[in-house]
Length: 136
Length: 377
Picture 1 (cartoon, rainbow over the protein chains, first blue to last red):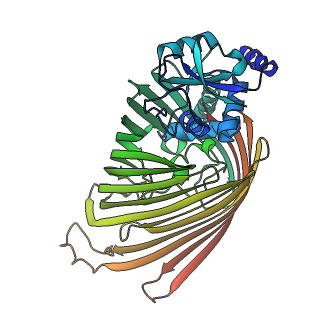
Picture 2: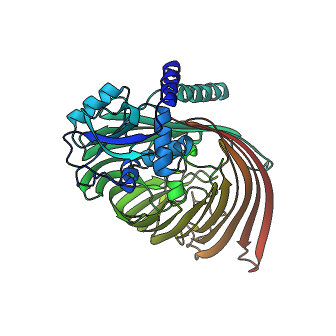
């Protein structure tokens, strides 16, 4: 398991460092602020900017995760792990649902119009998903 | 028995270590998380019964019925209780919209932010919390309901938590084998928090009516007075660059049956890659104001009528503890932290001698070394 994770984590090193925040093509929102992204993915709010309940989901890719959370929360992976431990065990929040492959992620977004995620921009397929924000 | 305990301990820790390699999300709806703490401790005091090696851990399961409704349960076990699991949290929560959550079930006292999850070592930098877990002489949970509300303004997050419930607990037995049952009713709590990227501030207030019953080992129970108690806590943290300063105080007034307590700590830590050195100072002051009735030991209870009750006598005891600590946290891997610390403790017992009206003071000094492994999965 660790072997596969290690291999998987190396791939994004060769990819773009831009991260796109994405939703389903059918989603009722078209823009989002960095402040909202931070609140939603750190489980501080359950609401999308349009008032719907957000379903956060993320790809199981440690490199992109690390970059994304560094940008939105200024926390490194270990600080983030401690943050989630506090949130989880005191019932204040839950981390995003984890998904193993990009195909599965796109399928999930397609089926859930209030789902929101982020991916390395080089993986963006604009025929399947909508980009709300690009983190550079 | 010792061998069994050690074997169980080894099994407990290795099982939790193994579990840390697995994902906690078992399905779309079910999520299981856990934690373990393993302590190795050396204290220069020889008059304490504190264990030198001990472990604790817990498991939490959360089932999400839909986006608005979920149920969560958390059990906790520690060596001190022979690993008999106790329920720390057990509740259902409803998301009512507009960032309002209603919960019903069993909760930890909501007064102090850092210590609400203090028994999960991974969530803190310290080897040992600067303060003992707050609560009423050790019990720190209640059954009831909570309302949580979050509001965002600019870069600030404000949150309000209202708690209401009741609790019943048995306090640890004293040396003579007697113990106390404490029933708390009308427990009401208010917690206000403000957060930003740079700082957080937490204010907590808790009040309740308490009914304590002395349970003697011979089966006799003595009902004590009903007591109102309240606790006020203020805690905050400031983050600047890699420095993190935290400080907090809690003032609890329980009067008569249990000690009044005042606790304070301040801590500073510096994060350097996977290493986080820290120092802290903590002060605890417990004041017992007990009204006790002296017993007449010379009476022969078999053949003579019981003697008239002696008048109640006030007894005042003050216990102070100052702790100076230096330590290091090393995040060896995601979900596993190693910690080491040295603490210098000064304990002072001050008792009012009712015979001569003078205070007697006894001071003890203690050096404590600790090594800790904390795991979450």
